[in-house]
Length: 338
Ligand SMILES: Cc1cc2nc3c(=O)[nH]c(=O)nc-3n(C[C@H](O)[C@H](O)[C@H](O)COP(=O)(O)O)c2cc1C
Image (cartoon, rainbow, N blue to C red; front, side, top):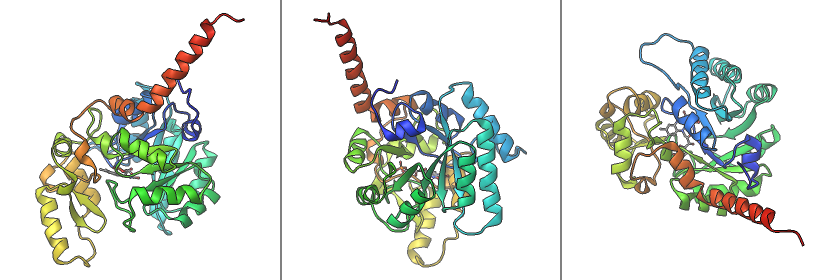
């Protein structure tokens, strides 16, 4: 389908330069398959397909997720690899295992979050997968290092984003052009992109694709619980509470309590198990006992829709241009030659 040339789409082998960002627990097979089938790139998040109480290895669970994706689409699908910053052996082995299982399942791209580890990056390349790198806090230095280490694409995340926050408080409007100027590989913009205006802004800043998390939570296929989806559609960015220095949440009971504790003692390192709190608040626990982490721009998200609709709304300019090229080609074909 791709008739509009774009480096991100070409590298990833997709039609439209939109990536569904991985999200712990809630970005599972149904969401990834729907986005990939619609022409973007779906990405399985960590703990995708986890069932409470089920004894299953990470490899088996990952293979099960990919098998379910393949029932829907044979288009390219990616995997999230959590890469430790330092020499944490167990975390490195887990990252290796994730790459190996995903390659076996047929992933075509690895979206690495965290540190820059040659051992993991080389394995991804060996497996024939594209390497996309997203340090939690993007800088000119780590973008250039990632490029030198063979990254195919770099993700520049602004402070507007949902999930773990960058530590430098630099918004998407500032970080994207900074990174675009620092590297020659294509850059995906992440953080606060929820509608077509956000996509246009990202491209105006020099990004060659968008990396979208929060908007995809409010979709039918996302594995997030209904409570999280309802809060996103009902509430505003101004309702977000800082549960600690690394994460915001919409106001659940748990988040309100964590926020007060954090206000009273902001320098005390976090005592909140944020991954566990996300699972409880957004996936399979008791919603009010966890967090609902989203971006600062949720005011423009009003309803839960199919993921394919998000892809087509955000990619409207690309789809329109593709239609134009198609119409032009068929008009030229129909014109008798002089
Ligand atoms: C609920 C939630 C969970 C997330 N979990 C992960 C994760 O496990 N791994 C990861 O690389 N990024 C994670 N992220 C970050 C997203 O991949 C992406 O960078 C971010 O959502 C983009 O910003 P946006 O939410 O403004 O679109 C998460 C984001 C959200 C909202």
